[in-house]
Length: 365
Image (cartoon, rainbow, N blue to C red; front, side):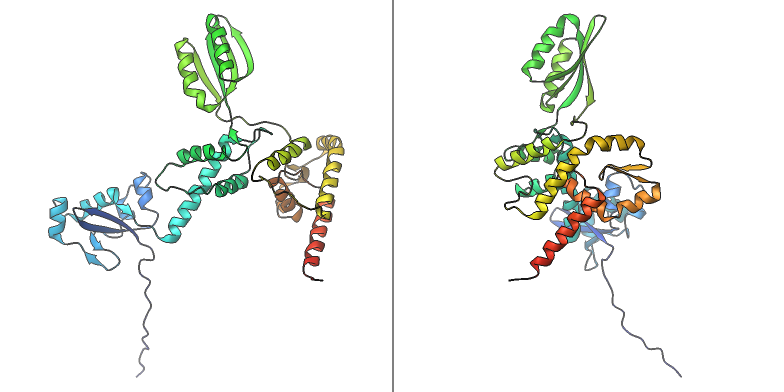
């Protein structure tokens, strides 16, 4: 008679459990919930409590499986109804987060703060926003630490004020339309001049005069109050205004000079002449010389245009294949360094030069 071979089975405990803890009157109470459901419940996305709680049971220690005593529940909550107590703990308790989960949340919040900073700031030299990777690097350089209990927008504004002390960065202006009676328009213009706001356009319609202007966001409340006192109205046309159009090579040169004047350069600065940099400079000059021809060819080209490589690719399938090519990836790296794109031939020459330099580094003489 054959016997079944029984082997011990390893158990993984608390692999899908999120613990919510509430300390009250010197006692600790815990409930076992599903991961990622607690925040959904608190934000109102999840309505079914059975999808949040793994069991309608109150513990004193979930990891050890110790249930809370009934006399403690009656003493603290006035009842031993586990379901109602679970709902109270779910709303008021503290979610216990593991180390990796906490690190992931902080990393996600850091990215959100950097995105807000990028959207609200510009480079005063080029009037264009910094890239997200550059903003993150600057935040690391000022040793910014994320506060998980604070709002991301509030922290982003604090980051902007701190960055302005060390780097050339400023808040992007707001674009507003101000409409006031004709007799008060002169006072409005004088106030705008005092605020150092730039006028975009003026318009007159009957007894009302309106102007479109750009000003610092910090003056919005004062401007709104001033316009209301003059029986006028204020409209927000754009929360953040950035420069439009293509960037010329002069902007790159000015940006590099500006970075050298700061204590810490915003972009990598080459300290010695190497063939790759010289080749890149020659290609940039060729790019300037052929910019006029490129504009004429754009009107004749057919297909989908890749703005990164400044070329027409063709149909949707070829466009997807182009995104996987070394040419597109190389131009993406140049774009993050605020360098103009290269053609396919120029890209191949530069990649070959990089390969030859890396081969030389493998040998020591």
